[in-house]
Image (cartoon, rainbow, N blue to C red; front, side):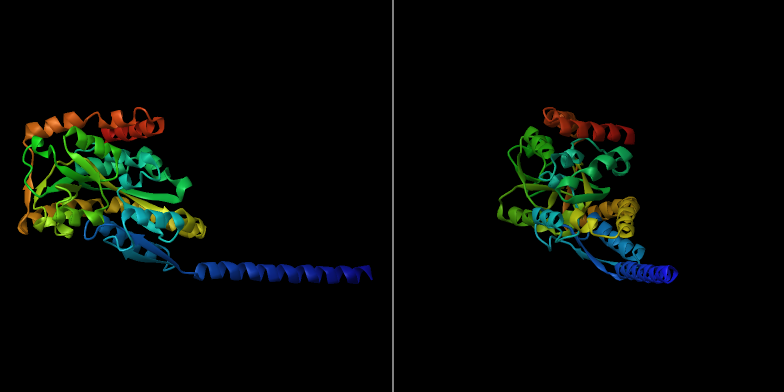
Length: 342
């Protein structure tokens, strides 16, 4: 009798194990069959950031075997830059690629990449964006505010599109200049005698057309793609600050992915952030040619005035961050890395 009961018990155990094994296998299969949509939101179009977004989206789809479908929304189709960031934080948008300065509302340390004088060439900026210490800092910011950093790359040296030509440093004085949302940029333009006006990209061209601002900081690729020539045909290539872009993934969405897809996203973002470098350089060069071919003018400050500008702005990073320990520590990490990248 005992032997028979033991046999029955073992059959029940075996049957239960088989059912559990089947359920687990089915669950894994269903997880692998599930398709996830990743909306990639950017404020620009036909520039370096757009090129990255397309490359990243294609890589994600390929590396995930089609389990992640990428949808790219350029030119602020999903709202202004702040609204895009909120969408990422709450999970409505899965990815935003944006200059980190615009994320100062999430963590003020995001603005350190906008330090004037930090970078003097595309090559140096590309090396800086790949520095392990810089990546550790920048990609770790905002983890407690709903964003997961995945990539960082150099976009373009900045320039100023203006309604009237700015051929000398003194001619910036008194002008209202659109800047990114960064105290580093604000203090820099204060020192140059201008009135800085923080503004999301979608509002810039109308503001120029209506005379609300006299000029705007951005890249030549942006000026060309959005056809600024009619409103502000004069571009002064100050080169300062360098413009970077950071790849932020919605942490809420990311945390809900299977681990293998999380790895796909992280690896693809890191790889494409480096792979885009030659393309970014080419887009920069081509945008300068397109600008002049379509009626715009490119202006360089006299060498002595360019040097004077860099000297005037050299202490901005240290001065802005000196009373803020966390910001100052971040500034030191980035500035030391920039020196190594020269």
